[in-house]
Length: 370
Ligand code: GTP
Ligand code: MG
Image 1 (tube, rainbow, N blue to C red):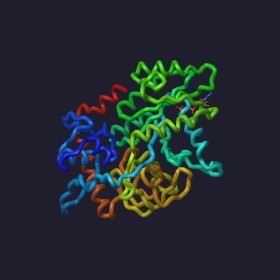
Image 2: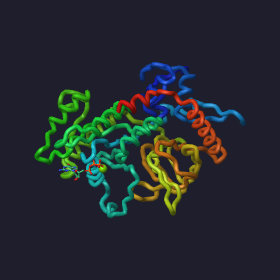
Image 3: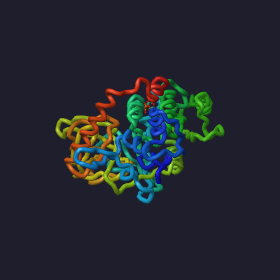
């Protein structure tokens, strides 16, 4: 077809529809998620998001939308990617630890478990959920500003004895700007001073109407300390994920996003990468940011070496040419020549962006508001 809706294109690009709408807005087009755009515009968007650059001749680099978009039949269900946000000390880490403790196969938890900033848990149903370990709000908005919106669902943690606090409001604003659905976890309900109802009422002031008050935002009372109702929270996540119908093509060259990266003295540059589509394998040649590399080894969130990682799986990748930045895209390419070409292209795009940056982008407006 000559046209595609923004929503469908977003789905096939594994990007957030809200991000596409924002990009279109920046290009001067007011389009909603359900509206169709023509092929030229779609191609522009694909370029904008740094997707598949197809070489058509020795000197030319062009964009092939059709080749980049995954056909519907190739898409299969994938786990949701969940980020936990909330005010300092409201129990984000405790909640993550509690969930993980409940789910990590016993025996592995004996101190060797490695923190890689992201991990996956398996629900009793067999479904998996990927949790991103609380990136600071700065990191979240920075990644979003760079079009690297990897989060499908935000769990907003609010301590029932403390209520909404400045960083809670900040998290609400970031979540709204990102267009990501939210689940409210009212934590610390074991405390005698806990006032869960007050939390729900305070949320109303930010136009968040929870189910308990007749709205459609799921709210769950939990205690991370006493491990109360963690099932309820996981169920809420599973339900939300079902509504989102998250899908990706596992059978293609992998694409992912860097969650965090560092330079390790012994092992060189390391990056925690969340695979978004395709399957990343040991030996794969890739471009990340404006550098290239080859997967030397991959380590999962239990510190085990793995040979491959599919959609929504977070892995630590060894074999990078340089330390990338959080939010950088990792793209597997067929060979080293191609890797250099894409890396060069990305550098050119980066340079161009630097010289033609818009004075006031929508992202800036959101950033100022938040
Ligand atoms: P930052 O990472 O500093 O933003 O904090 P956080 O949101 O990760 O909170 P954290 O999990 O570190 O918990 C803060 C404090 O609250 C700790 O002393 C926890 O033991 C306590 N806490 C967390 N959850 C609960 C809960 O459900 N009940 C009670 N009573 N205390 C809790
Ligand atoms: Mg914490």
